[in-house]
Amino acid sequence: MYAKNTLISLLVATAVLSSVAVRAQTSSVNAFSPYTMYGIGELNTPGTLPMRSMGGVGVAMRNVGGINLLNPASYSIAPQKSFLFDFGGEGQNFYNAQSVLDTQSGDYASKHTAYNTFNIRDIALQIPLAKKLGLGLSLTPYSSVGYRMRYDHPYSDDDPVWGNVGSVQYDYQGEGDVTEVKLGVGWEPFKNFSIGVAAQYYWGDIDRDYVASASTITGSGSVSSISGKDNYSVSSFKGQVGVQWVALLNEKRALSFGATYDFGGDLRPRVASTMTIGNMTNTVVRDETTDLKLVLPHQVAVGAYYQTAKWVLGADYVYQNWGGRNKGSVQTGVSGTGENRHSYAVAYTNTSTIKLGAEFTPGRYDVRRFLKRCAYRAGFRYGRFNQTFDGQELGEWAVTAGVGIPVHFLSVSGINVGLEYGRRGYNVAERIGLVRQQYFKFAIGFSLFGAGGENQDYWFLRPKYD
Image 1 (cartoon, rainbow, N blue to C red):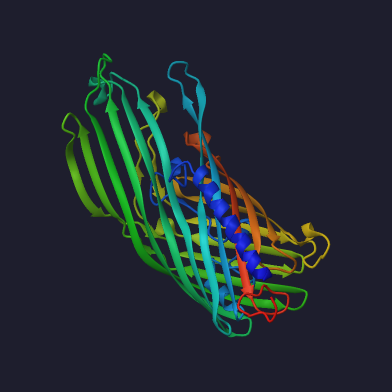
Image 2: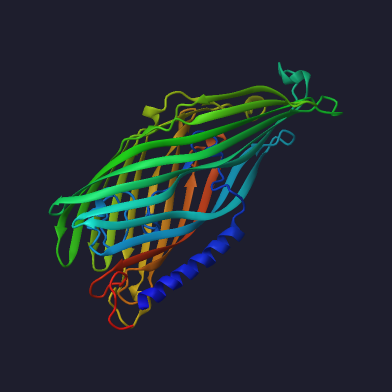
């Protein structure tokens, strides 16, 4: 009966969360960054909310009461007659700033934009198939695109093209997402050693629009504008394998190591491009569909995970060879004026990321003090963005925090709250004139654990008394 009431409470909370999300969501854009203008956009940090609140660590995590989305080998720990279900939402605030030269005063001025989003973050399920054999299924966002930019090219009589026309205004905008569905199986063939395999399916649509409008020198009108639209449609499979080894396990502590390898693969995005001249008849000058090469990287991740009654410590290292699988570069448009005019060659680059996280539970079995039964989490993540601008690498880092709230005494089911603050591009933004980006994320998630046994949440057992 208690478990039923708990489920009802969580469902009510979910309904409230969904209604808040509908009111808070500013648009369908799930990211707001000029760095999403190329490729598949900004990569989302993988993992459930408890893992993301610890910096994103979890390659070696083995926890009966938690779903590990990073390593399919962890599914082997699923206990019999049980299930795990995890879902939640995430709100984000993006703040972008850039120093821009004022052509009249000759001084640099700081311009900035801010944007808020709120959407459902992920859904995950884990169930046992047999003894030491488990299955996991998840639906999570992989990457997001969202940007709106404007550039005014002032009139210059020495410009070989626009010097005969006037000033030009360029508008760029884009939005879209790529979603990942992952189905994996974990098996423990030997004591304290598990292996896992997973199939991942990616799909989504990304729209990118641009408009170039020129004004005459006299300012008495404008010439025909040129607009274009590109739609990228993604649909592709890839795979992942993982292993976990429990090196130490006793009543007081546990130490485990893990590793995964992602095969990557060509997303084979199908691109439909249209270009229109904005005269009275809106003449279409190009309308074609092509297959664009965009390859997901091979990825290697290793990690360690240490647990005691009060403490959990984790560390991960992730390497992705974006540059090795995506050759070539894209030349951006010209920005700035006079001697300060720049154009940037954008190319993919290999990345390395370090993740560190900790969790502290003061008194998991404390009957009187509720706050001592809560789990307090913190973490740090540092790495490089997967694109370079004229060979310059953009640093990015984030600090995270969160708390796990049990729904009742000795329950594994709970409510999780997480925070994240991050920065990107500050190491080179001032030197080469790029955008300085910072963001703040707030997330809430629900974890449902159902199992039969002493001090567990009863879901599959029929009670003798109600």
